[in-house]
Amino acid sequence: AQSVTQLGSHVSVSEGALVLLRCNYSSSVPPYLFWYVQYPNQGLQLLLKYTTGATLVKGINGFEAEFKKSETSFHLTKPSAHMSDAAEYFCAVSDDRGQGGKLIFGQGTELSVKP
Amino acid sequence: DGGITQSPKYLFRKEGQNVTLSCEQNLNHDAMYWYRQDPGQGLRLIYYSQIVNDFQKGDIAEGYSVSREKKESFPLTVTSAQKNPTAFYLCASSGPSSNQPQHFGDGTRLSIL
Image 1 (cartoon, rainbow over the protein chains, first blue to last red):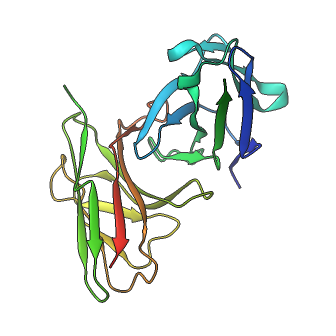
Image 2 (cartoon, each protein chain N blue to C red; image 1 turned 90 degrees about the vertical axis):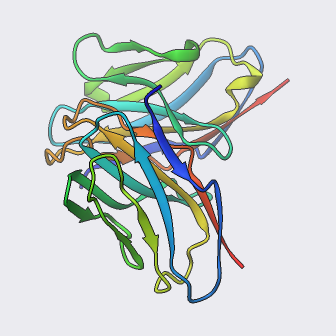
């Protein structure tokens, strides 16, 4: 069955440190992959997406992710964490049964940023 | 600006009562979705609709009902059969293709009185 695994339900970094949030997926077809961010009591906001083409994808707020087919991974990174990056992050993969925009979400990773 | 509007932001339900959560979008999207979010459990799909007058059950449809009479609207009813309705509910919409992201509303928090 299709799945998305986010390693680590909680990640803590110091301000200015590298942010690395891990995501692995399974899909029977070439996947479309997405990262979303959620601030408390708000909806999800799209950070970036991979559909086709360049495997290194740049998103908003200085985040980027690299699609590695051989590792079935789509890890999210940011070179220097800011306090405002504290939020929950969700990785998602498109449903592989051709059901339009339906997504399979990971369980989420809560990012804390220490001053 | 185009977007998704969920209302109300906060909702309280008495025991044995049905309540309806509103979701409206002006993005001209074909597909709409309802998710339930509980602490530590990510997003769980309740119902989705890919076209007007059609919808499918998601992973946790029991105790919920929906309708899709208009492209712009996808209301969710939490019925009295849903024994643990306290949660954060998110509505989303997307275009018809798999490479198009979902766009989310700001959510409705439902609590039991």
